[in-house]
Length: 626
Image 1 (tube, rainbow, N blue to C red):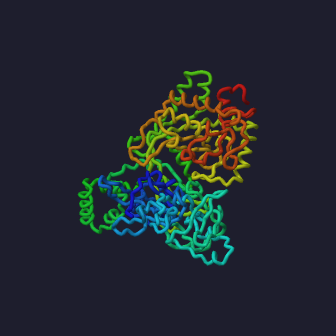
Image 2 (spheres, rainbow, N blue to C red; image 1 turned 90 degrees about the horizontal axis):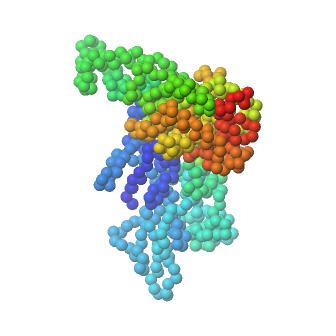
């Protein structure tokens, strides 16, 4: 069998097509090998992301995955991500016969036939239907398909289903106990049963059902591409899962925005090239005489096509602290740093930087002075309005989980000095809510009582988030639900499918940390293309457009097509962590939500549950709320 190339988007490669995942191609399923098999990636790593690494508490180098492309002649150039066809077992759609890796059958160079049917790796070579005595034995000829089951363990292991063991799990006769597994000869069949399927051994007539739970033997491999068993026998039972079960593979990723001063680095400049070449810096600094130093500088300048004075000035710039210039980067201060960068105005901003914002706050306030009624009050509720014309997001793959169990690193052992990461470029819209407005609403007793229900459920839910566990509070529930409602509305107004939009919730009560209070939402799109996106999202931050957007969002929150059922929900979803939120109103595609589509309730945006005032009810009817 010749190797085949399966095109995969880079953004998918670090998510549902990452290490250990089952990826469906046009003709078969494959599983992606771990990073120790990857070749040809960015050996130097992604540069100028020290703040990102520190804020995410990552000590390893971040590297982009290798890339390959299919040429016009069909050949693959570059370095592809290695994968293995898996499951290796196939079954016949006609007779149910199991065959192991039939595509590895040796070819003789001529067409082989049995009776009138040609033997082909894509078709069953088992015995066919009954035939006249003395006649040729025809083959079945049914099409072979990969079996739709795998064996997964919560420690991150994945293996073939032990079909022989399933058929002989409870042998009652000695002859059956003596039956030995043989992966080369087709003798096992999968047959429909009253409840599911059974595995039949045609040699000894033993049979058994396909059980959901089964022991993970010490003879099973850790992963399909590793021909070695686990170092220690896994505790607990493994699960036999269908290949489309989401529990087989859950990627663990984290993201962070590149913000000033690192976003202001002018890539390709002399100072950037010198900063990225420690060898060149050492060569200059180790020059013992002025003549030797001058010669070194002249050689570097000639190589880079610049003047000697530019190289000298670049070295001085590095000595002054380029690129951070002495600014401390606190470990773990991810959202606080991003929030301050979003609300602050950047001086001397250039359009080709990696973090470009355009503040509309003044124009937004001026618009409020010209309007009256509900529109003016909605404007008063929003404190800042900012268009993010350009942003860069770093997406990092930490590993994966199976059955929501232990996390497995991308290299399986965690010993590698690097992690796969991507640079994603895009645009967004950012707004904050007025603190005085929020405090007034949060003080309401009904709001606090409804929040307490979410708090009690969340503490025992075990729900995880790539953004870290949120602090469940009235403002978080309101901001998160508002973000989802806005994503759904932007799908029609900005021209982006909801699945391509992302959210970042900046939420913190005053005094909870050094960064002070935060109450903001960033909705953005980011793709692995330096040109970024099309601009349809940031244009919605223009004050008149944003007012129409916000008005439509609040109006949509007031009524769901599944009301009153949706509005009266006492709890649904994982851990019962959603209330007045469903697929008809507030739920969004899974890639869009940073918190697993939970902690959503329209009652925190507008009044849908009797007695509980929504956030924007105060804005619309201030005289009725104390």
